[in-house]
Amino acid sequence: MRKIPTNLVPSPAKAELPLDLTGPHITAGASSAHRLYQALCEMIVGGLVKPGEPLPPSRTLAKQTGFRRNAVVTAYERLIADGFADATVGSGTFVAARIPAPAADSKKPKAVVEAPRQGAFSLGCTHIDERAVQRFRAFGRRMRAFGPEHLHYGDPRGSRELRAAIADHLLSARGLRCDPDQIMLTSGTLHALRIVLSAILKPNDQVWCEDPGYPAARKTISHCGYRAVPVPVDEHGIRVAKGRTAASSARAAYVTPSHQFPLGVQMSMPRRLELLDWARQAGAFVLEDDYDSEFRYDGAPLMSLAGIDHLQRVIYMGTFAKTLFPGLRIGYCALPERLIADVTAARAALDRFPGTLMEGAVADMLNSGAFAANLKRVRKLYREARDALAETLEAASDGALSVPVPSQGLHLVARFDPSVELTVAAQAKQAAGAEGWLLADTYSRARPLPGFVLGFSGHAVPQLVASAERLARESRGALRARSKSARRA
Image (cartoon, rainbow, N blue to C red; front, side):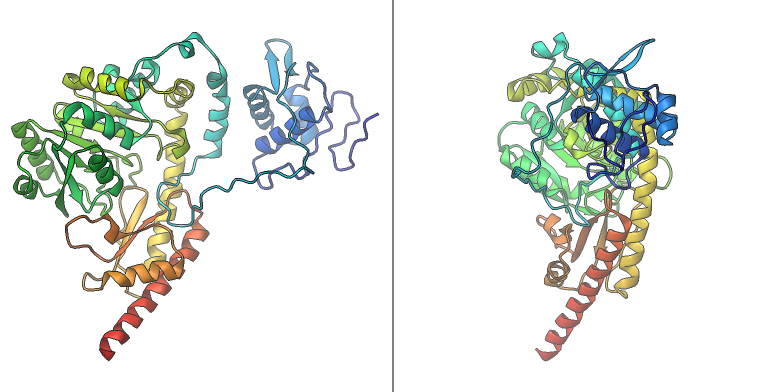
């Protein structure tokens, strides 16, 4: 007879389960549903219940564990989604006839794969609400369902179901009306940029790029054989007149109008109309990277440039890397009708078509309201992180840093006075062991400003505050050291 550890939930009745809710396999501090899921998995894999054996009704297990019934239901749904259990309408929930293989013997040496370090201020980190995680896992049934659509080459633009859900989202969130046929799925913004440029440009064609701007986009443009032309940015956005002077024959412009990267300015309406006028006159296209527009903290998101233009000369690019998580690797672009055939052909030539297994799950997230609910919850977390970071930097730097609080986005810029040498910021960042970017690294030709580009999304507030205090302290120290050196000279 199997010996039951003393720390298991008591099981006097036959219907009760020998659940270990305190062992090392349980994540401390996790939700009730997650801990119960872990305990059930351990019990099933360990053979305490046999394949095909019925599990207690959710009310019975809730009474046994003291958890709420919805936690039990959520745990059961996840067991089913992950293949540990099956459900039969009217009969209940049963241990699956075939379950995943048990983990390897813990005494055997294990290979350890370290995740890339993501310290405070790293850009591109996200948080996803636990309720959204549970919902996403429940949608695992969609990902696990193996249908005929996975057995042949698909539409180069991706599944129509997800494209239709994205079109609905763009209409409600960004004021952009488009048909699902105008949407193309990609693995991210840079992938979309590469595909689109290959369809609309010829080798050595010029592309306007904001200066300062997103370095990865500039590198992608240059790597693909096009000429990235830096165009200065001011408080109104890209300076179109400067672009005309620098490259009047440019065939495209890459911009971040809703939240300019990295400075955070919003392109003014006169500047937007000026940019669209140039595109029409030059027969050029504007590539709008709308990378974080869903995270606006003061009022509704601004209308997209593509929405103003009605997708005539603007190609809109978005991503789920910020709104859900980077590992999803799903982005998209919305195309003018005249470009659908050419861009689709370019996509088919580059990598044929996007992966199909995740598309249904993401479509369910959008259509069920879980996506919007997650945005609402994490937007509050990011606002708190933004405020804590800005307040700490301002106070702890004692005037050394200026920190404009952005009304949108997932990063902020902390600047020294423009007269400060760039080496001061580099020394402070290195001494503080800070992640994030040097502001100077985002410039191409314009005179760089000294400061930092700091991400606040996906980081715990205590970690942000402690790191901000350290960076501010080192910034003061680097300034003092530079001042003493100047006086001696």
